[in-house]
Length: 568
Image (cartoon, rainbow, N blue to C red; front, top):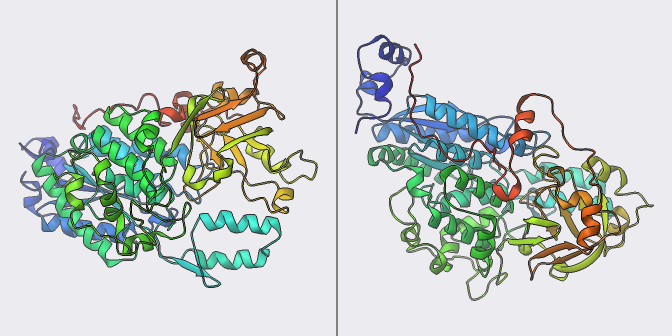
């Protein structure tokens, strides 16, 4: 079959002349003969996305691999989203990044694409884009940073930010010591070294079959990442020749494998909204309850922060993701393919655990049941999620009095007031932080605890919100409550003093009030986003709820790679 890029470059008319002539800036004549696949390198490198700042070097290795396999590599910078810097939240622009990347892949004369991501939203956005355009594609995750140390103790970036900042508020760590740890935490290039969202989504990409197996989790400074990047460049050319597309790789069985992987590694709750969005682009039937059905009973085997003790470079030396998956191989779909054309399970042969303190045997798990729990009830008719592996076991069944905050600003203004009517049995409720309300569904669901309770030694409480939380965070935190308050969800009717009942074993989240009383209450409608123009206006008008993946309603499904009209 002729290469897609030949639709631009073959022929002797004015348009083909223009397309070739402006690309002749060092490319040989053979680049346009229709026998050499043109491979875009969708690169999210940016100095303002510090976790991805090294991806230009990764791109160089991919480029060399593409040339070596007889392809033509083409750098394609795409929208980059840095979790640590972008305000009000990087999630507000995940769909924009996906849409822009999709359109650039479709609009340009390329035959396949290598997707370079790292920081939280970049891999999901790239996979959403690749799913919608469905050109041959493969992911290279940028990899985690090396472990930093402070006072001789390993630091988990993100996780220890939350922990140490609470100790400062509790008065058990000085502000000076807290600031000194800052330069120790980020030791090298790469994304967060905990099993946060970046590490989770790299593992999800591999579980979905979209990486060269064995790549996810390779530390960013490790020379083997560049070796794998070179191999991936070669593979991208083969993908084009074989016509293997994301829709052939990411099937329902692949998503089952991703959900099993998510539980076994203690991955981020953010994977739920990202996997739902990717599936929505592919037309794969996946719903929120699948995470509970498939993940229930899957053991937690990776002893990594925030659910455990170790960090990502420990996972890599201990055997990597393959060693984890080998222990749960019987739970994986044996037919689900990878970009190599072979099933995921075929790549697990020979995987071994080299350090059982990091990767547990199935007979000795960190937790016997680590899947994301999906809760329903009169507070979450369309669902909410909780990560039991990161929660306090004694709080997974709890009844407490609600202390309600109408916005992040309301929380910040009142949380540490000595007059706040709260105790350790209370349930902190935050609303107005969902997809529409904020907008963008920020990572604020792991509310800080009231200062007066921290001073008493309290380190966890039940917290409920329509927000997300960082994959590096921990605690008994109920997230993604749907519908959100700004979309008319029941959270908008909760008042301080209402009894909140959490029962994770029964998968319930309720406010213990008569249905008629709750329905009769006037919902809170203040503090929600009301943008007048631009992307935020488009987003608020069209974003779907958490149980649908927080994509825009007009972006579900795919449009393929066809472009019907010429440019001149």
